[in-house]
Length: 281
Image (cartoon, rainbow, N blue to C red; front, side):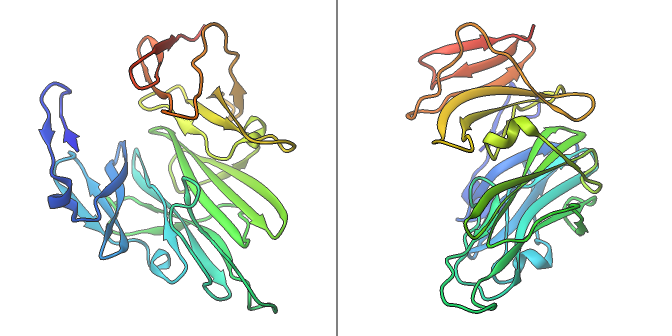
């Protein structure tokens, strides 16, 4: 891990020394500093930092430390650190795994019969205004409990978060639910029709305009395929699919295309061999 306060001088941070052998996963940076998940003694913990150099170990919300529960990547925005997860709602813990799909999640491999033979999971969301020292449970209106559940966050900018629940009950689904929030604690359901064909959009970093993209398209009928799609969030919280023209970057099954955004537009690279620049018109 390399840390810089000005982009010119960098400090090499010894991850094993700072975080232990469990290391640190993806890091979210925003108005509340930096936050990321790690593992200590095979248990999930939250790490937070204001400068990227000095890190504090934080405990997860109690509900996400219980049997069958797990947390996923947090998001840092202005005034809050927001943490998604999944908890066991009822039934036995048959099998679970954190990080299901790229979001938080647990999934069951249930066997047997009867109402208590199948575990049911529920999405769980928490926010903290004190750098992860304490947590408050957040309500997602209309969230669904199911056998298979995953919850993840997409940070569009320092004042916009999207929460995405993926769930499936038996052979019905998969299904997706979406919410949007400006503060991490108050959420409203939204219908993101263009997102119905893929489950986890990725936000382009450091862009206040709400641009994000997907590299996977999964239509209701047919097979998933790789395709680069660009989207924007409108002022009235609708998803707008952007028309793309010109030499569009391919999405290969090998080394993936990396995207970043800067003053000139969206820059794409396939590992450095080829580069593309896309400008909004």
